[in-house]
Each structure stands twice: as C-alpha cells, then as structure tokens.
Image (cartoon, rainbow, N blue to C red; front, side):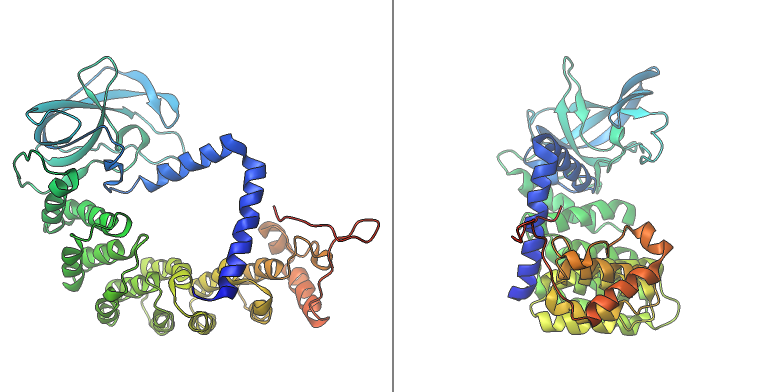
Length: 428
C-alpha cells in the first residue's frame, strides 16, 4: 500500500503486538513459534531445504524392507510403528555425497496410528519411481534419515519425471534441479506434475529464480482446470508479485468453467488487482458456484488489500463486496476491514457493517471498532469487545453499545490515575 494511513494503522498494531509478544513469550516462546512456523512452511513439496540440507539426491526407488514392530519418535512422542528402509539407485548426487555413489539406503519411521487430530503418516515412496530426496546421515550407520514425509506426516519426497539427466559434475544444485523440475511439471500425469509445479513457483516467488515461469504460464494458459489452477496458484503465492501476469489471469477469469474463472480471480487478488474484487461480486451472483473457488477468493481478499497500489480502489472495492449476496465474501471483506484497515477514518464504514444480517460480519465489525476506537486505552468502550461465544449469546447488546457510542459522538477518554494523569497503555 502506498497509503500512509493504511501503513500507519497496520504499523501501530504490529508494534503493539510485537511488544506484547516479547513480554509474554520470552526467548523460549519465540523459539517455539519460529519452530512452528518453519514446520508449517515446509509441509508443501518445495525445494526449501536446499541450502541447509546436508545431502540431496535424485534417484529411483528399487526396493524396500521393513523392520520389526518397535517404538520410535513421531509427532513429538514415542509411538509404536516400524522403520522402513528404501534402496535408491542414485541418478545424481546433487549435494553432500560423492558423485560416483550408485545406491543409498534411506530410512523413515511410520507409526501404526498417528495421534488423534494429526495428519496421517502416508507412505512417501512408490517402487520404480524417481524422486528428489532430502537426507541427513543417520547416526552410527551407513544409512540416511529421510527429511520429508514419514514420521511427521508431512509432504512426501518430490516425485520426478522418468527422465535420466545423467550425473553432472561441477554444476550448481539448482542448475541441475530446475531442468528436471520443468520436465516433471510438463508431465501429463497431474499426480507427478503437481509437486514440480509447486516447486517452480516457490523458486520463482521466494528465491527469485524465474526459469520455471514460462512453463507455469504455458500450463495456466492451456485452460485445463487441474493443471491451470495449480499453475496460477504457484505463480502468485510468495514474496514476489509479478503484475505482468495480470493480462493472462484476466483472460482466464472470463472462462465459463468456474474452477478456472474463480481461481483466476483469486490469482489477480493476490497480485493486488482491485478490479478482481468487483468481478468477484458479479461472479458470486451466478448460480452453481464452486465452494473451493469461493473459499479461494475469500482467502485472497486480504492479500489484495496488502498488495494494491491505491487505497481508494481498495475501499471502493471492499464496500462493493459488502453488498454481495455471497456471505463468505462479506465475511472475508469484513475481516480485512477488521485486521488491516481499522482506524478512526474507517469508523463510519465499520458502524455500517453492524447492520449486516450475518453474525460473523457483525463480530468482525465490533473487533474493528475496538481497534479504531483505541479500545485498549479508551475507558468509554471498556467491555464493548466480547469473546466470540459471549457475543453470540447476546449480539444485539453489543451492536447497540457501539451504535450508541457512535451516536453520542464517538468520544475518546483515556485511562487516568488518581491524580488525573493519563496512563500510557499497551494493547496485549
């Protein structure tokens, strides 16, 4: 956003949260949060570990053996299961082992039954298939421990096209991997192609390596839903926002197939195209909407706010969304008002949201009003921001409180000590 108002509101909220987080979490807590973020960010089949991983190979699985029932570490605890050891014929020793290595043994532990609420630990390999595999040397053994899938149920090793590139000495790892990823992304079997499509998008948007972008654009332009949807997501998820892709997505957003048009609208939103918000409203009025596409568009609305170039366009478009008949769109837009835009200048808009018939929209409006009214140090709105469950028990009470505060002039009264001095506060 170029708007100083938007950035100021967002920066102030972030600063308060950062201070509060430092006070509450401490060093151990921050380390835990970092570990959690790293775990979730590495679940997708991307080449993220390439810099830190000790051993990287590509190869074909030639056999597998299993051990006896035992206990091993999985999901952070000791749990019953079996060790699996696969024999891999190495096509290319990309990093960490001798280029002439012909075979390796990679082991991973699979529990019989993951703890309740955790993802199932899926078997990561198929016999006679090629993979990109991240490893680390196993202690006191000539084998290697698999760093993907297996014990934590994460993304499996990335499957590659059955093309043998030959071993390449003296070539950087990425220069050896990208041709294989491109060939894999073009496979007709979407089960094989999907992982490489995601990996090429990761490299383009987080690592700045754009060599896979032409292939992703070609896959998106073909208009085959299973492939095009993945390619559009891959091109627009990440740090880099390539707005030169907008003409392609605009064309796709007019397709009759809702799975294509809906994802194209979401892709435009992720690039900050506020016109896509207006089109989403029109698209949402049609019949036979795909639930997945509604969710995709709703999830992209916040990214649109963050990446758009003009605040006026964002506000106008979000207000149009709030007139949509699709409740998921209104909920998403109200959440953007709440989390990204809430400041004193937006008070009239937030008050208007209280009249929406959906309770979640009303609750988002109340949370945004609390932020805009500086409720953490405004005594006049103390108690006006309940927990969600409390709000749902008596929604009219809290809606009425905020409307009355607005009608009486939206006043601000800071906390003061017994001598009348203003007490500085920090929102926790």
